[in-house]
Amino acid sequence: MRTAIFPGSFDPFTIGHADIVRRALTLFDHITIGIGINAEKRPVFDVEERLQSIAAAFGDEPRVSVKTYTGLTVDFAREEQAEFILRGVRCVADFEYERNMAEANKQLGGIETILLYTRPEYAHISSTLVRDLYQHGRDISQYIAR
Ligand code: ADP
Image 1 (cartoon, rainbow, N blue to C red):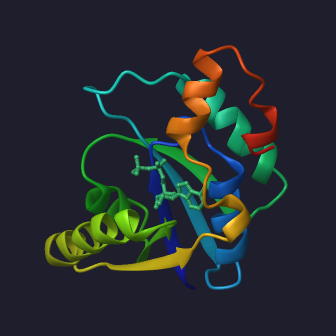
Image 2 (spheres, helix red, strand yellow):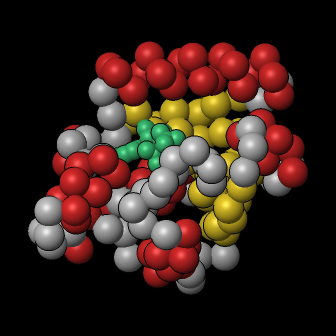
């Protein structure tokens, strides 16, 4: 059985995130979406809202589950007995960041990271953009996975 975690802040969980999970289901038997809780970051969307939107998108998919975690991603992966970390790459800036994280996680936990390229229609969608729109009173429903 091939298992992966898909870790992130998901503040909020967007249609870009959902697309990565859906496409990765062709590679993995099970994916646990891990909402990383960072005590130093004040999220705009509370954990309940994030869990709800992930449940709306994947509630009827038994091969996807969702959990929250604190601490290091490699420790969460070990708890979940996951063999892989799944991440998405939108642009060159993401690539540099992901390469460093993948190397660190390989050294720390002996775990491989699998990267999927974002489809072009989702490449401009970031949680940061959606948060900005939300905080300026715009309708964000088209960006939120459901
Ligand atoms: P983090 O705070 O750990 O960077 P994010 O919640 O921003 O987490 O993103 C989680 C993962 O989803 C990252 O690998 C990121 O590159 C990827 N991602 C973010 N936005 C998109 C998108 N629009 N399409 C595909 N992947 C995305």
